[in-house]
Length: 252
Image (cartoon, rainbow, N blue to C red; front, top):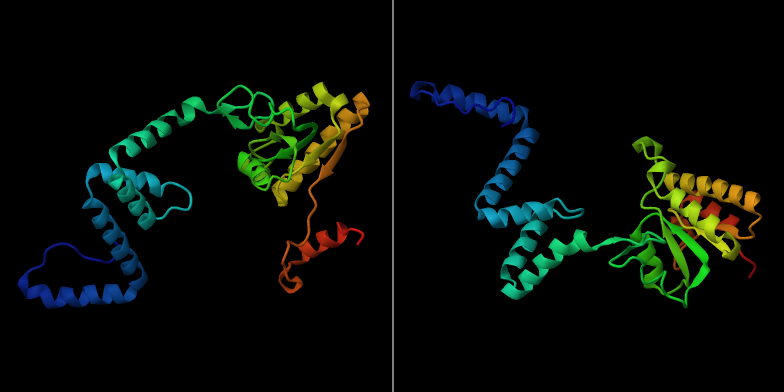
């Protein structure tokens, strides 16, 4: 309970005095009192749920982007599922980490030693796009706009969070490039266009150029183009986006 609220029992002859003190305390700390009421209400609602349902709701609430109300709705949704569907869901959850592993070539997630992308002979294995996470790879695959292969770093260089080049799969990429350098045509650096992504891309560019100079390989190192999205208005674009759009302009 917020500081200043009294919960101890009071005598009848002091009720008026303590009521006055409590009202003054509430007026002095209205914000804290409201927060306490909300927290107490949420705790009371959760306490009324059965233990198993409450634990499921609390687990959902730990997921990114899931609030308390959404977590409760998801928990009740599972409760209403047919038994067979719920058993299938539970089995897939249980097998998720046991069956899922990283591709031995590109580090994409797969259930086999080599993922379906790397084992596809129709893909152009001479072009490698380097992405930070698997979710970025899925963005390329969703639009069916790319025919090469990938390398997933599973992170990015972030000195503020003590993540250096040795903490992500950069060495694996460099080993792969050295092994297949003669057959490579292009390496596309597709890390995110923020401070950490740019730092990662510049580090990779320097290391890849070192390999090119040492081995005499002829592959190109490129970076994703930046600029205005389709349908955007110039008045809403920030100066950095406009600057990149000018730098990466094309002949029309």
